[in-house]
Structures are given as C-alpha cells and as structure tokens.
Length: 166
Image 1 (cartoon, helix red, strand yellow):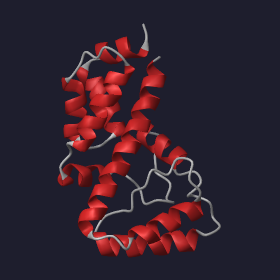
Image 2 (cartoon, rainbow, N blue to C red; image 1 turned 135 degrees about the horizontal axis):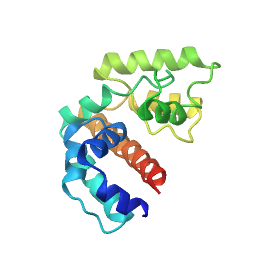
Image 3 (tube, rainbow, N blue to C red; image 1 turned 60 degrees about the vertical axis):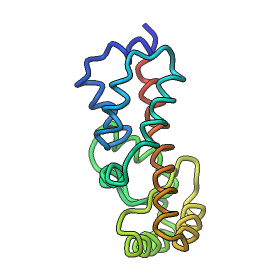
Image 4 (cartoon, helix red, strand yellow; image 1 turned 45 degrees about the horizontal axis):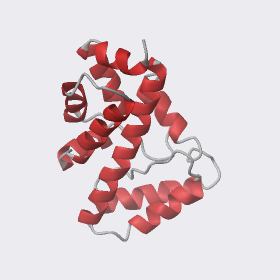
C-alpha cells in the first residue's frame, strides 16, 4: 500500500491525531479529513493548503499556541515536538541567543503572540533579521504573513507524515 492509500484508509481518530501534529487548528485537520479519499499526494497537499488559507485568525492563534518560541526547544517526544526541534535546530544555537530572546520579546509585546517563521533551513541570524523586519509591519500585514508561515509549516509536516506512511 502506498502512502496515499494508507492516508485514505487510516481510522479518522488516528489520522486526526497525526494531522493535529501538522497543524493544531481543529478545523484544519477536520477539513483535510473530510475530503478523503484523495487520488494522489498532490491532492492531499492541495487540500491542506486550501484548509490553511481558510483558517480564521482564531484558528491561526490556536495553532500558534502549540508552537514554542523560536529558539526554544519543544518539550516531549510527541511527533509535533520532534518536528519542531528539527525545524528550529539552527535557531537553537547558543551564540546569538540573547538577540533572539530580545526580538521574541519585542515581537510578542507588539503583536500579542509568538513570532512564527518557517525556520527549516534558516540560520539564527536570518531568523533574527526577519523578526526585526516584521516588527515594522502593521497587525493586518503581520497576520497575513503569520498565516502563510503556518501554512508552510503545516505543509512540511504533512509531507513528513506522508513520507512516514509510505
């Protein structure tokens, strides 16, 4: 059985838990589940992207609550925590940590939630520079950016999930 067949045949409760590790917004996972069966991997990823784009700001905030601050290690051995540690490995470097803590604090004070960025493949200085740049955004602009960063993270995690099912 290939990954798509496994994805389509998993019990909803099991797949729902796996999807929550990709994106903690309940409506995201429910939407992806509701469109089963999928014909191929591209259709699953397209449905996930569409579900991400349809999230309300409240759904985005629900997902943000499941993300640690950039540069902090997610605790535990859940699939989501393991993925988070992998995605943030460069941000967790000890050199420059004070600068990262400072920009996280300034961002949270301005916007009221954690700084979210698709961190995979990005170094700590690049992340700090992006956070500083985004501090200049108005709330509406930043919400759009955060929503898209969340979409990219959810997609990467869904791709990892599909790879694990293959």
